Amino acid sequence: MKTPLGIYRNLPASIYVLFTSQVINSAGMFVYPFLTLYLTQILGYTALKAGMLMTLSSILYIPGSLIGSKLADSIGRKPVMVVFQILMDLSYIACGFFEGTEFLPVMVLVALFFDGAVDPAREALKTDVTDMENRQNSFSLLYLGHNVGSAIGPLVAGYLFLVAPKWLFWGNGIAGMIATTLVIIKIPESKPSKEVLEASKGWKTTEKGEDGGIIKALFTRPQLLLFTLFLSFSWYAYSQMFFALPLITTSLFGPGGSKIYGTLMGFNGLLVVLFNPIFVHRLKRFHPLANCTIANLFMMVSFLLFSFATSVPFFFLLAIGYTFGEIIQATNDHYWIANNTPITHRGRFNAILPLIIGSGSAFAPTIGGAIITRFGFTTLWLITAAAAFIAAAGMMSLRLQEKKEAV
Image 1 (cartoon, rainbow, N blue to C red):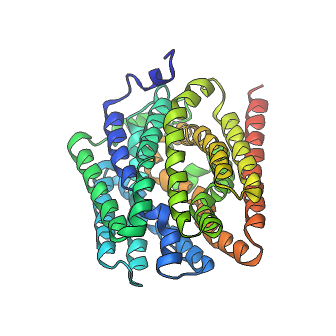
Image 2: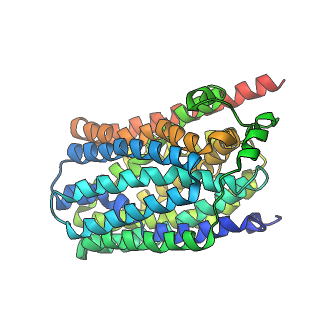
Image 3: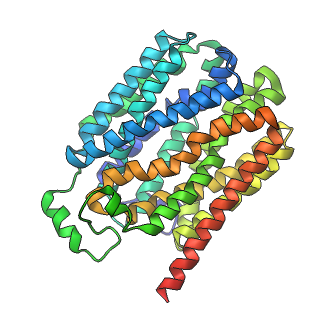
């Protein structure tokens, strides 16, 4: 533990399998980062229309998430995760056959519906196989795996976007199938037994079980609800990296902007790979809420300076700032949420809370498209920076309230 990479030793076996699966999945994550460019440059959508479709995709994520979460708490984590992941991958493969047609966005929406059902089961599974002692390090490794893949995926996707757009969708689906096969073979079911769930209601920890339905359980965790509300502002801000950033790079740099955007995303992934263990190792002694506050301040400054960015080197400099914010937040927010989620409701909490958090990213494309159309990119980045500031201020207020109650 004396070196940054030491935090990844002696973790649960399932975490190492999930890490490998995550690397494969993320290396093949071609579609979503380039969806805005695909809709605007290949299908001819306006920025506003593209934003509205991406918002619709986030709305369709909701019923998928609710269905998946209920099944994850009743049937089990692994079967729900596997079945819906396969359905999502098949949907992306089907997209390749409809590439260039108006039916393709429909199939993308279907795929993202299935993606919504996968996420609560996957989040519950990785929480099940960890405890409070190894959870932050485990989640950090999984986040690292996502970014190892993401350092490769956008670079490949940037090339495919220009020369073989069908393979954006086929490649995404095939990589997902390979990752899912690994889960099927190597990871056992993790859902706690009825006896453990019943005994958990007497625990003295923040993971203690609760009686009743999801609404009753949610209101036993008011700070968690507020935290997710503030995270929604943060996610609104960060989501402009997937919507506004590709638009501004192509606006400033022409057809080559898609390659610059792909390189920026690859650079983002590379920075995460290099600095993720360092930040976790150095900041672990601080409270997660304090770390999330710092993360949003990093993002606020970066987004504010995007208002003045006109050169490629400046874009890469700002990418360092928002990536540092991303690393700090990503290695603290899910960790804090998992530690404050009742064991009896893990699947359902991992559906409801992301819906609150994801409302920011869901409406980011529509709001961003409207702002760009009416006021331009400068105003967009100023509003984006303001959203990150609201998130930072809210998280700091929660930390101060927690310290006050502890006195």
